[in-house]
Image (cartoon, one colour):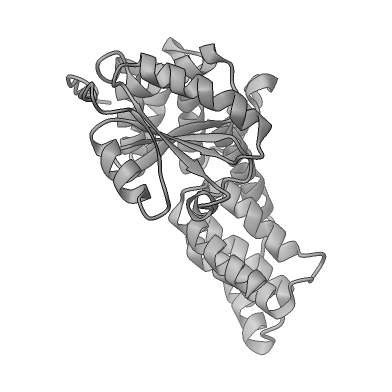
Length: 307
């Protein structure tokens, strides 16, 4: 593997002293306040509601630490009672939830009322001490390699980061995803199994567990041609539609997988105790809250269930 090249910048520009780094936003203003602004500096979005007790504990802590960062990050607060659309699109089901946006996309987050020290650590990680650290740069490059299909190189870089920082969950999750991309299911399972119990609920780890469970489930499926023939003969062959959905997911046709499961929901929502809907939810967890297929599937599922 060639030596990775890291690019170190001067960090994010400090906020203007007269410009309050904390504001409330709306669904209409979200693109400007969060997506556009995050291209200049990291933006934290605090999803909250007036009735939420833990939100009332977290918000003052967030505001204190954000102000103390002196322009390192901005904080945008969104009341999900008044503006539920964005939280729904991101798949947020529990509050308080804080999502960090950088360069127009969500990059990290947490749920619950964390103590001040943990909030500060999170913000320090997002803002950086004047620019991305070497570890963060290595993780970014490893993610890019994985996206490009350079799975072995990505695995090596994730492993190097993990050797330097054994508690870095991003590196562990990235290495597990690299193993999965290389067809090394047992190695990925072993890595996920090594996560300490107190961190087992992390969103990226939960997504990988769900993905591994799907791969194990898919290994027992039949031939795609036979399944299609069964569906052609009987469009209400729910078992064939279900198995075909899992096969399409195994071939990374996520929207196709969602479509077959949604067809079952459309025809017979209660088939085998809502098995299709429950499988969709598992797929959403495996794909991630912000994946395009997850957002597509959630929109269509909502339309079927609530129209």
